[in-house]
Amino acid sequence: MSTAVATHGAAAVRVRRVAPGRLLLYGCAVLITLFMLTPVYLIALAAFSPAQAIFDYPRALLPTSGLSLDNVRFFLTFGGILPALRNSLVVGLLTVVFSLLLGCPAGYSLARYWFRGKNVAQLLLVNVRAIPIVIISIPLLVTFIEWGLYDTVLSVALVHTAITLPLTILITASVFLRVPAEWEEAAMSLGTSRFGAVTRVVLPNSVPGLAAAALFAFVTSWNEVFVAVILTLRSPTLPAAMVQQLSDSPLTFRFAAGLCLTVPAFVFIFFMRPYLFNAFGVGGK
Amino acid sequence: MAEIRIEQISKRYTGVVALDDVSLMVHDQEFMVLLGPSGCGKTTLLRLIAGFEQPDAGAILIDGRDVTDVPPGRRGLAMVFQSYALFPHLKVFDNIAFGLRMHHVGRDDVRRRVDGAAELMQITRLLDRFPMQLSGGQRQRVAVARALVMEPAVILMDEPLSNLDALLRLQMRAELKRLLQEARTTTVYVTHDQVEALSMGDRTAVMRDGRILQVDTPMMVYDHPGHVFVAQFIGTPPMNVLRGRMGDRAVEVEGHVLPVGIQDGFQPGEEVTFGVRAENIAVSHEDGEGALPAEVGVVEPLGSHLLLTLALGGQWLKVATRTDFAVKPHDQVWLRPEQGSIRLLGRPEEDG
Image (cartoon, rainbow over all chains, first blue to last red; front, side, top):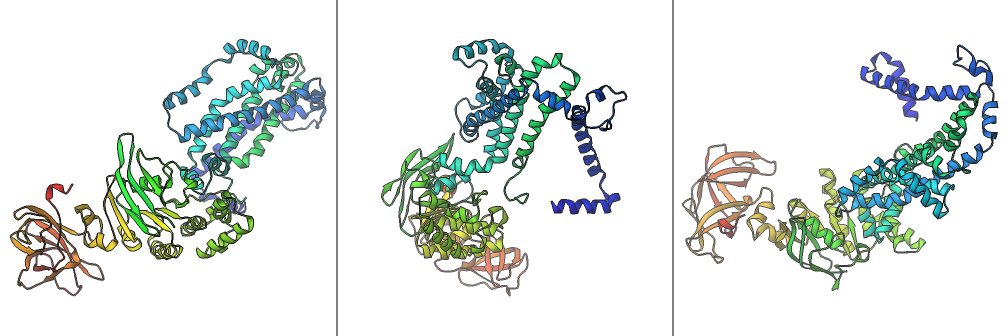
């Protein structure tokens, strides 16, 4: 951190000497960040503004008309929203757990073993995503009703796992590929089984990659609407609940909803972020 | 304390023969070096001994016990990898303690033995660091400590010095040799560096194309190569290999006769290849009894000696001589191989 500050300071002193390529790079970074953050900012601004400020013209870009928690409070206390938020969190976390539990062994075998039909299997994995969920949604619905899983968070989490699993497998496979086989062999020569070598050496050194896989699974589940709408009625996830209510709710409600849908994903990413980079030795942990 | 018996091992990978009917006996407490160019099968043989790979045919016995189907951790051996294979998420102490903990050694014993191994390898002050924070030489020491702390019956080393810079390699070579002698552990050491093989091993197995060509003490491998490949792979410069015609207890080369004293099963009149080391040929400006005339091609002063590349008729050979030997290219000189220094290696068609 201190080195970063130091180099920034140095750059400020010699501002004329900054290479044009570097300037361009930073310029692009700023532009992309603005592009991504501006809508989020506008949604947050509207969500925290008093109700009538949303209809002001011209629209204020700063909270000039004062801040208010009314919209958000109204949204959160609206019937069914808090349970839906909780459902979404539970479904998201279940999806992360399921896809890692299933994806890690599959990714590991893709990374370490050669078997007949391996290339075909890898190709099919990606192609699973090409199957439109609309087509399988009705048989799925019937099956879940028969199993007594209809309208439960578990059913949504299972389908979300099926959606995320192919990419989870490919991500974990590439993560495990980057762990040298020699580390496993060293562990085995020191007395572990292959499974022990994986849990004691491979997994601890795969944390950043696995965090990325988890992040991907969570965000996919968090944003997924279609399956959640089909499979739930009284226990919807947050996106499903909003689909049901958004079209006939006031603008203020929609902005508050948008904010509440965005923030948990940001929080999740924020906590996962340190693990996305090399956790050991670098970054002074 | 263990001997390793390798019985007629074969191993092939999708069409490529890695090991072809290899047998080798490593005695208790012996330092055996597997030497050969890359792709000769030396690392495959080591990995088979370690148990990371299964042979297609043959058996591996450690101390009389057939371990061919025994997993690596139950063979009573430890391995030092070329890349060191330290666990990056564990501190040096925990890296060294890893194997002891896997074998359920008590906490106090772990502490004591790790401290002992660290002291032996002079890395006590590094125990609290992560491998990322160590230099290559320090990592090497940790890897050796991690193997030694297990007090294994057998230590396997896969080119452990090849990632060190030249000076450090020289230091570690002597230090490793001393440590392994003191540990009295049976050692199998893989290298492509013939200097390491000569300087460290009790015996050296020279390999090529999945076969062992010769197993002998370093001096025997150096002085009495049993194969043209061995002669040319070992030594700096490699042994001169020349062609000639067998006479009566002599070799005729480029119209000159060199007495060899032995016949070695060759018939008079047969074409033979024979070898002679650069340092076993005396060179002078004067003709004399039994001297061979040669023309100087290249003169290379190497500090300790002068290396001459000479043309003997149509064949080239290298000769080492004193640095005060005044000579320049195109000079005519006379060569006298030392008595008993000529090695009959085979027939030219067997050179392969």
